[in-house]
Amino acid sequence: MVQNEIVRLQRRIGTEPDGFWGPKSIAQCKAYVRSLAPSPCPWPHQKQASLQAFYGTPGNEFNLEKITFPYPTFYAGKAVATTRVNAECSHSLMRVLEDIKDRHGDNLVVMRIASDFAGVYNFRNKRGGSSYSVHAYGAAIDLAVGTNEFKDSWPMKASMPMEIIECFYREGWLSGAVEWGYDAQHFQATDLT
Picture 1: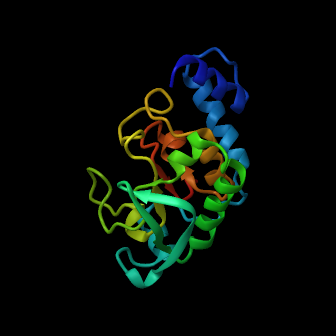
Picture 2: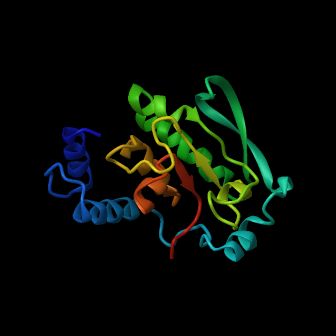
C-alpha cells in the first residue's frame, strides 16, 4: 500500500493516521477486528488436538460439504461455482461470502479480490511444518494469492482489503494479515485463545 492508503486504513481502525504502520497500528488493528468477532469464539484453537476434536480427522472428505459461491468466482482465471468446506464451518463461510457481496458488491476493487479464489480443502501440512494445515480440515480459504503472497507483509506489500477482513471477523474467522502480519491471502475458522 502507498502512504495515503495506510492513512485511510489507520482512520478506519481508529488509530493515529500518520502513514506509518508500526506497533501502535498493528495493536489497534487487532483490537479493532477482534471487536467485530462473536464472543465467545465459535471455533476451536488451532492446536491439532482441538482442530481434530472439532472438525474431525484431517483428510477425511466425508467431513466436507459443497457450497455455491454467491457471486462470480474464479480459480486461476477459470470460473468456478462451488467448493468443498468442512460441514462444521460451511454455513459460516457462506455468511461471510454473502456479507462481502451484500456490503461490497458494487466495489470493483474489493470484489476483484474476493472473486479470486485459491482454494479451501487441501490435505497437506503447514508450509515448512510437520503438522496439518487448517486447509487439511477444510476450514480455511485463500483469496487473491497473486497480490497477497505468503511472506508478503501486510499492509505494506500485500493488498488484502480491510473490507474483506472485516467480513471474516464478523463470523470469527482469523486473517493471516492481521494475526501474523503476512499470509494475507489466508482466512481460517480457528481461535487463538
